[in-house]
Amino acid sequence: MSSLASARVGIAILGIAMLGLLTAAQRPKSAPAVPAVSHTASEIRIWREANEMRVMDELRALLEIPNFASDTDNIRRNAEKLEEMLHARGFETRQLEIERRGPVVFGKLETPGAKRTIIFYMHYDGQSVDPATWTGTKPFEPTLRDKPLDAEGQIISFPTGHERYNDDWRLYARSSGDDKSPIVALLASIDALRARKIPIGVNVKVVFDGEEEAGSPHLEKTLLANRDLLEGDLLINGDGPVHQSGRMQVLFGNRGIVRADITVYGPLHSLHSGHYGNWAPNPAMRLAQLLASMKDDNGHVRIANFYDGVTPMGETAEQALREMPDNDADLEHDLAINSPEGGGKHLVELITQPSLNIDGLRSEDVGDQSRTIIPERAIAAIDMRLVKNISPQVQFARLVAHIRAQGYYVTSGEPRVEDRQRHAKVARVEMVSGAYPASFTSMDLPVSKALTKVVDAAAGGGLIRMPTSGGSSPMYIFENLGLPVINVPIVNYDDNQHSPNENLRIGNFWQGMEIYGALLADLKW
Image (cartoon, rainbow, N blue to C red; front, side, top):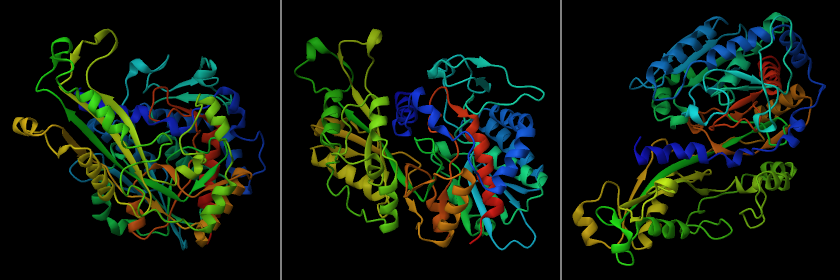
């Protein structure tokens, strides 16, 4: 793997801090023992308790198929498996694709007499894996533990016969949390509704993305070429985790994202640090100085006009932020953070703002492989999260302007030798594919209020309303098609999303079935 590719892979591994990986001591907050849930949720629970093996077997079979987006053969195996699962529920299906990459699996299930159509978006591809970094398990061999690994959870056998799953057991496998379990939870909820004779009240469509973890580079083009299939009244996004408190949450927006690779150049080839130190410019030092110029000690971005375009989200959203649980102190303790950035603002406030993050750095080797040299180049991978009204192109242009203001000659490709000879400071700045803008759905819409009510009842109360997710998802595509977009995640907040030892808390999976089934049966507006 090239150094640049390694830096990009580092984006996934190093970007997990916002997911709230908390200690075992907090995990009992995951869910109430016996919540008083809605009638539909209760009926789904009755069916599930008698059919846990069947549901879990289907999830395990899907998790066994490797699903890195660039692994074309296995991505197609995933798509075929999903079509098989959809056909078993009576869906009409199609594989939609552009340039023969990660097909979008589309499915449609019509309900006679239904006046509304709900589209569910989830993705079936996953982050890349290094099996050597997993502890005691393999990424595509689903394994059960009696509690989380970092709470010394032990590997146990899967139940057989009439044995039941414990809610706090964990299923370890790549994409167990992100994003295959929501797919299975949705389809299993349809089985439960039918078995308990609860009518589905809407037409159902599904869009299962095969390139989300690669930035969904072909999704917009694919969907626009098939926009006639996407007529509907609501898009529900099942990606992401529940709140760090363990409570269910509904989110009404997603930040956008633009990523960039910054390469700073030194001598034409690496040099002996004794012979050339104090004379030859060191690109690693210069890159560190350049990156340090972009933010102050409180995390405020110094790039000119970086926050221009940020607009208020409205009083309802502001009130929702004020009602959010204040768990910053818990996060600081469990993540060993003494002084957070943000100048005293809460995390929930800060994720409604644009951000700049360093995902990874690379120059030369360290540790046992280090050498006393002046490197030839140094590379940084960064991401900038976006809010509404700030486009990826505008924010990227602001970044480039800042780098130029620090005295750099900026190029989008590999600089020529003449460029390096002519300019004291040279930087190559490239926008990484997969950039897209933010999306936001008003929390005051009738559908927003109706959905919140249904999810709260199915969860047994305690629902959290979050104006926007800190993470990014290409929901702008559906927003541009005229659909309100609301995110209803179900998986545990400490699922090690994008990281080694990804896992799913079983109780969250069961509750996800109840939530999605209630939306299919009870949502009316």
